Length: 209
Figure 1 (cartoon, rainbow, N blue to C red):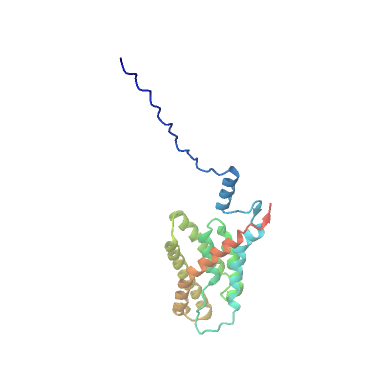
Figure 2 (cartoon, rainbow, N blue to C red; figure 1 turned 90 degrees about the horizontal axis):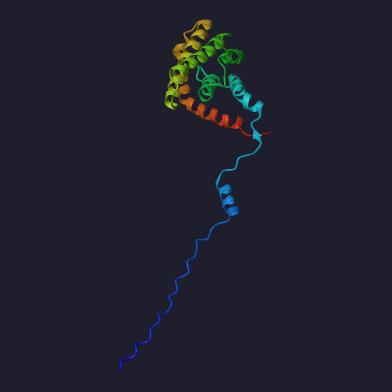
């Protein structure tokens, strides 16, 4: 008699581990996070036209009044601050000051600098024309190149200004501008930083559109 086949064995059902999906943020949460990460800018704001257009002119004209400061010296030591600011604005914003700006600003400086009237008009206008030619020849310049250009223009300005004043006074003043020239060259980077700060102030979004 043949033996009966063994009953089939049932394997225990295997349960797979439940997979958990990574928690997803809602669209509102993602939008809020992206909004917090980006810097907020004022909406419907623009710089004041009077402030944006008047700060360079007023700052140059204000430094022309430094000649009234109670500084007494036996030799010229005060740098030409107004002319330095003119060059700094011209290098920072080349298209802002027109070429003819040297004429009215130079005439204003002549009223307070003590130089013979007309010397500032000629020298400031010549400096603006020279900067226009330099911009055409050397389009890409760094701070060192601007400092060198400003140093050459400032040296020429001081020598010619002292020469004109020496002719009027009958004394060779160009021989005494050594300390003034050194101080002028050393202070031009400070003037450049001052102009950069004034440029940020004039572009503050204070006007509501």
